[in-house]
Image (cartoon, rainbow, N blue to C red; front, side, top):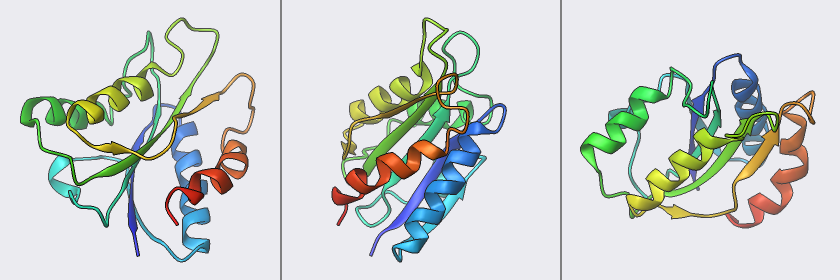
Amino acid sequence: MYTFEIIVGTTLGSAEYVADHLVEKLVEQGFKTNIHLDPKLTDLPINKNNPWIICTATHGAGDFPENILPFTQQLEQNSPDLSNVKYSVIALGSKSYDQFCNAGHMIDRQLAKLKAEKVAITLEICTLETPIPEDMIDIWYPEWSQNWL
């Protein structure tokens, strides 16, 4: 049974709300979860039984939120072999910006470069089109969970 590591990058709280709703869904199905609001590479297991789900907003002009930036820098500096890690990305942003969901796409590329295995396409949530972003989890989750069961 998996224990999902939920890595959150948030500025105004939307990504955290989305992550919390995802945790509810996972727990309902009997999975264990750990949520990381101040993620550190040393706190994350690197194995097949602890998949990572990155749930991050995009801040400013396509940047990472401050709370997840140190984690992305640790990934870059340490270049760990993540070939035993399965992951998914949930990216939040506004289509009114040129760099829509850029933080999610940047961490996706970073994890792929470190040989992590992506399990599903990135869920992009536009906070302008979806006033309650966590509602998108209800739509996305059934298909996404089939990749894990």
